[in-house]
Length: 205
Ligand code: 5GP
Image (cartoon, rainbow, N blue to C red; front, side, top):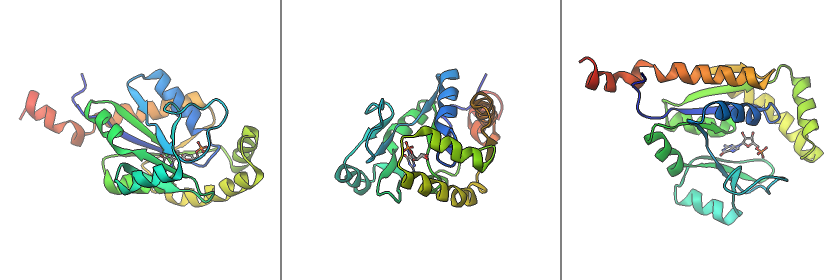
């Protein structure tokens, strides 16, 4: 029996190429009750990416309208000029309905979520080593050399903020990293501050 009724907001960050996407996909495949939030972005779709499934692909104007209308829980504009952000309403509706949500976002977005939602669970994913990270990033071959170098340079700065996250996880094997995230979410469901109201209502005053 689980007594917390609201979903848990989980932030997963980590350097580009660390495999957060793969890890989060494993988590949601193993747990259909955990939903990976769909971000809005102005970057062009990669091959195989579908609007409304992988991202909501927006023009710069559309995205800036979302910012002005306060529709985003968090957002960031990356050095390459592309915006990325989390549509707030969709996220909140799911949380209210008891769905656990993972935001796979960068540390700047993570900072904004932490400030607005102190109950969010912050997980930072690390590579087994930085050589391995570069190998993974190059293996992806979907980015330009300039993009790769800028993403590598950002990863060290990102870890400075990653040190403030609640949990650090090394992704040496996606299934293992996913199992750790699942274990964290399971434990978080039972945190006293999440359960106390329901316990007082239904079990003991
Ligand atoms: P990609 O272009 O490879 O899909 O994503 C690049 C980076 O954008 C990833 O490291 C990912 O964490 C970050 N990202 C994706 N969606 C969001 C979002 O909604 N907000 C923020 N702040 N970052 C995001």
